[in-house]
Image 1 (cartoon, one colour):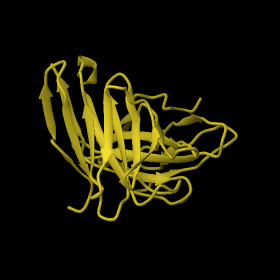
Image 2: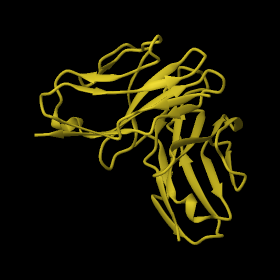
Image 3: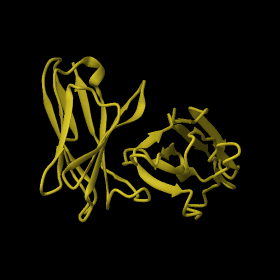
Image 4: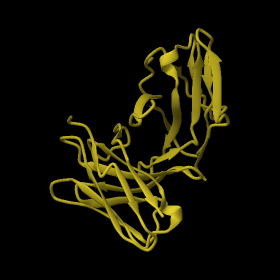
Length: 114
Length: 109
């Protein structure tokens, strides 16, 4: 499968903990986007990286951070977790950072904070 | 502020009936609009985008700038169309997607 991959599929942790979600973009894609999907907020854009550089920030909390590595995979770090952080976290990738690039989504990581 | 509104959380129609999923947007710039679909247990995937003007799986959507709408239509629904449908707006400032809340479409046999 040369599509976007995300690991792990599921993550269960406790409040106050820290987790790392990983995303590998499609082969050849330089842009990675992170989204959060929760029941009450719907899909929310978190952050966009292009070729290792942060390009845009959305509704990302200060407790959350992300980075894109030289091999173009990306990690989303969530710290001091709260119950409300339980959600599905999607990663998407696109070829470049141009307005007309299509974003392709990964299967998501389901985070449950207990 | 930019916003996408999908007024129907749930839409249920019979197989063979026409389907219209509503999407309205609020954006002062030049909008780029998309419909994404999420079938059960599958990832989000692009269904169509307004700049392509294509018909995918029998669905079409026309951007109406006067009404700020991008409704998704299909003349004859099929059972395999049952899924969650999301309308999204891309703003030209930073390319982020702004999402509607989604509409769950159920096609009854």
